Length: 185
Image 1: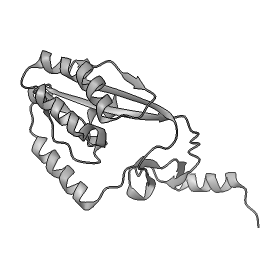
Image 2 (image 1 turned 45 degrees about the horizontal axis):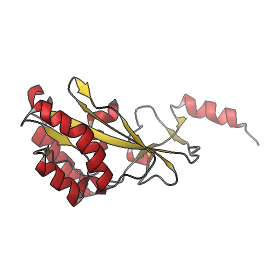
Image 3 (image 1 turned 90 degrees about the vertical axis):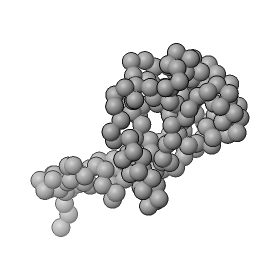
Image 4 (image 1 turned 180 degrees about the horizontal axis):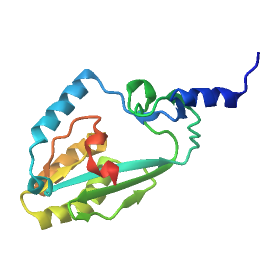
């Protein structure tokens, strides 16, 4: 007996299963989970005034390579973020563009767009000097700068620049983009 694809799809739909693309996420270890929970608990009672002094930043890479994302999974409604419905992803490959931006309560930086890989030197000379330093000057000593833990952000020249400009970096748990409000902008 042969059954059409549409019949199978329709029957799966009747029992609440639908074809969807899996969520892409980074792999988390038990240590990552523990550190993320500790960070969340430490900041759970922060006031709006405290959060208003934090500049959240992030960069996104847009690949010029084709990614058809033709992988589909069958899942029930409300199970999008269940582990069995995700695909782990570490890095992009190939050519692309990198876009950096920052947000702070009531304001934002200009977007920085570049076609080359981010290095510690570029991060210091362009991002910190031309964007972050200006906000630090306007905000004063309460200013906190959030960036993630990618290598260029943790270069020695970046640490020296932050120290010389009296910019305090917010501790940030590794592999935690979902905790960053800029991810939802």
